Length: 52
Length: 236
Length: 147
Image (tube, rainbow over all chains, first blue to last red):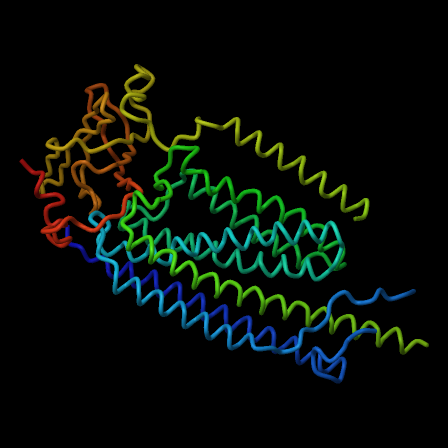
């Protein structure tokens, strides 16, 4: 049998990087949306004292 | 009606993007390192390269679910909402790595075993673990009240995390197609070094993911607290 | 810690204990495959039923006909041996001395007719010994065993 297993190795690393970068982008967007909503509600930046 | 003081504060934007970039760079570095240093295995040939993503993904998923266990217990103990949010962030990241482990295992199984999937104890228990945590995440979308959501989540999260030792030991307890864990004795040192180097980089990526998801969840909750407080304040 | 949280924790501990006992009860019964010894020990009950058989490919027993796609070899667990026949190409990592798991039926003629052949790997990872190139090893995987 011929050893043409690079396709599987390539697929494995491609899946890994698509997932890592994709999830990173998703997390980033979700955080930006949350911060925008926070600014809209409170009128100030996150972390500048929310104690009621 | 009184509003409870918020237990969650919106985190200040910090240097986490820098941490994220560093962890990605570390992942590239360890992958390049293991590609350059590891010779093809006598049986697996080049497929040995999948070791450096499949095994770290599985280990990191275990770490995530251990975090879920610790923070779920802490939430039940102290009732602090931020513990619940951290457990949920770890559960989501753990589910991501769990799914990655399964897919990478299938990609490896086809050439190495001759099949994409079999219902042996290791693969089945790993799939069960994945489904439990997908269920965990779905459950959170259905429960509105934060305390209730935290309590239900903690219960499912603890039960799910207790599956981890079963998944880990499955290849030892039962006869499976999946091989037993390798040890330093059964594995040439260079593979061992590459595996742990990549595990280190995966841990950094995991920490970054959990932190970002946790920050987002805290910010969302803080905004909800703020808008509730504003609505109540408007009634006076 | 609130009463409700205590109740949740107790419930979780109960369910977990129950689950662990269940798993413990499964114990050794969860086998993905039978060894040749176990298959032969079943006697009459072992014939003509779908089972998985696992063991090592006995070196020197592999016969592979590329034209008719007939593959024949013996599977052994050191104490017992079963003759296996399959129509179709073996997985690429199939070779003498390797672990295999075979799905199929054990016929009364003493031949295990395989419908599916899988390779089982050990947890050993070593580079080839000096002088052996992996590419060459692949070429000898099947052909080297053909008598």
